[in-house]
Length: 271
Image 1 (cartoon, rainbow, N blue to C red):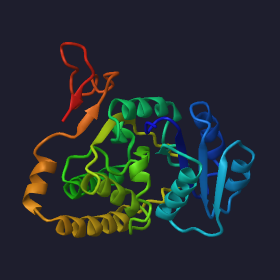
Image 2 (cartoon, rainbow, N blue to C red):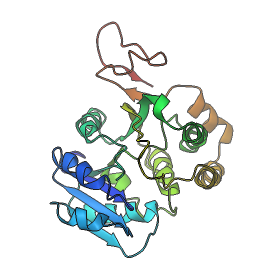
Image 3 (spheres, one colour):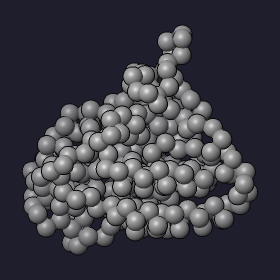
Image 4 (cartoon, rainbow, N blue to C red):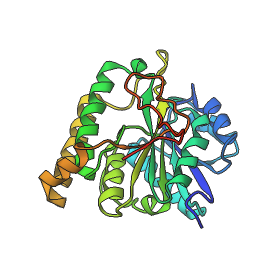
């Protein structure tokens, strides 16, 4: 069975009553196997989700994004998922990108696929942009390969990576740990497709704390770099070339920093 034979969408959420209903209705237009993990919401999020044809997993109190993802992954594996596509519950990610991410997963069997926020970057808050740049620099080193947008929550995890649920990492560090484990332990490629930054000025404050969570991710990554050894070689492999980018629709063509498509018209794939 291929990784995309039966994809599941897993949506961790905490106090997302404002956005979760509309988001899930749009997700269901692309995928009927949807799991929502309510991480101890107190604003009626779970009541909204319960009225929709999705699987709801509830935490009685907040346990962090890492534990929410773990429980979502466990539920997906128990239900026969071939792989998992994750999205945040605040509406930042566009469900219409789901087909593009799954197409990239089929184009690169076994790879992790990241929806990299490379379009409309000017809408991203400056503090988040700086924190993401630091994380990209460090986590790429940890992976031993360049990765575009290591902090994006819209990702495709093939089943082999979903099965890494017992990786010892908590909170937002868990997503970094899965990237490093996929690359280092499983030897899987990491591919990015361009998606838009989507920030709503009226949305609730992000659960990601730029300083605290970046420091936690950095400390975890430093320990992993030391654990795998060959520190200098890993740095060179991760920073002397570009991340693998799949952009068949040439969405980056119109941006100053975006690569132009090849003259033969084939989709740009940069290694």
